[in-house]
Image: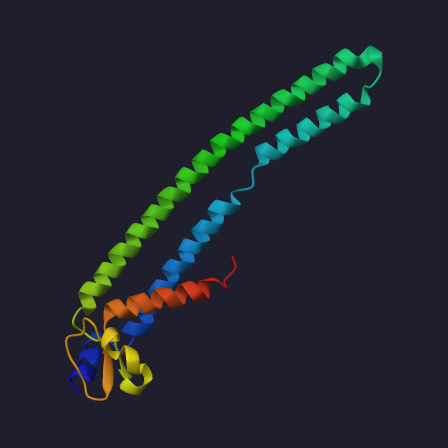
Length: 178
């Protein structure tokens, strides 16, 4: 009954709350990755693209030999706008990548800090107690870092719980769409 008293001392919601924290970190990580891939809607780029289309339409309408110089001038102007769009997109993608990288690093740092705090708080303390029959071949692996044993039960340590929670949350996050 020593293990049950330890769980009551630390709180019986430790395992679900730890799982919830891990899921939140996984969802935030997936959200940042999707934002990075999707990018942002850019009005300046769309304006330049419409201007280019308009210039090319006007140039194609001028197909007479007398208007060849004017059509060539419009095509050169469209080519210049294309270069401007390419340069703008390159700069914009660099800025976005730096921004998302900074947020990603901040998320990773906060995840490491929270995991370390959880490990320090629950080291040598069981986070959950499970019947030995349910985890028969993995009982000793799950009880790593708890520091005690109970007959007929396995005390789950924080590190195996974080590993399991991470794996399950990654699996769950595959099915979540933003």
